[in-house]
Structure formats: structure tokens, C-alpha cells
Length: 172
Picture 1: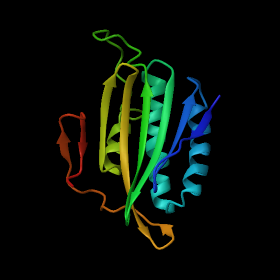
Picture 2 (picture 1 turned 30 degrees about the horizontal axis):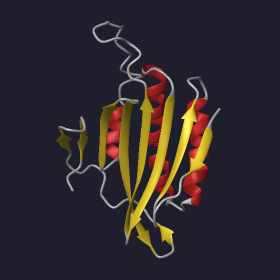
Picture 3 (picture 1 turned 180 degrees about the vertical axis):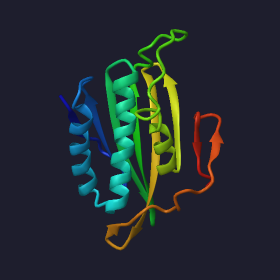
């Protein structure tokens, strides 16, 4: 069952937390809930679609490759004319013990998810902590007038390796 909660947040910030079942269909159900949240946040359609794609990729990785449970944390922060949506998925770590070899996945079907996340986000990373492993990504947006517009950076910008986060990121 997917649950959602809206935590109290300072001006310009909002957060939703979703607990996800480790089952087929969980990602599509989560996407429907996230689409409604993004509509409430009035994000531009292109940014909302990018956020949904990042959510799908990170959740799919958690469900396919990690131990349950998986939790999605979606947050929005805004300051002046700029903002970011942060997608963070926490799971209990790899399902396959280290050193145990598995058959390599078919490259036509698997293996591009984290490249997609890196391309769409300005920052992303991995954090291992006592509650599991969290993979996160931040997608920028620009506030124009009463609505929210598209990303603040051009896609395809050069990427740097963020040694601490374990993920590539675009330069600031």
C-alpha cells in the first residue's frame, strides 16, 4: 500500500514521503501519485515529466536490485526565482550479496537508468547510512510569475564526477 504524508516545511518547501510495496505495479502506482503532487506544485510539464522519469528509474532500481522496503521522498525547495525538486529513494541495500556473481543483464533491456538520472539532474548521488542506501537526484526549475517554468540549465551540459556522492553531476 502506498501512503503519503505532507510534512510541515518552511516557506517555499514541501515534502511527500511514500512507502512502496516490493511488488510489480508499485512504480506505476507511485507515478500516478507523484503526477498529482507535481500538478499541485504547478511544475511545468517538461520538468514534471523529467521528475516522473527519474522517480521511475530510481524506484525500479530499488525494487529490482535491492532489499525491501523502499521509500520515496519527494521534496521541493524554492528561493527567489529558482527551485529544485529532490527525488530520494531509500532501500535496505543490494539484494545480491557482494562477491556473488549473477548473469549480466541484457544491455538492450537494462543498464541505462542511472545514465538517464544523471542526464536529467543537476546533482545526484548515493548515500549509505544505518537505515539503508539512498539514491537521490535534484532537478532544477525557474519560477516565473505565479507559475513554475522549466529547468534552469541546458541538458547535455558537461558533467563532473562527484567523488563523495558516487554520481556524475553538471558543473554549477
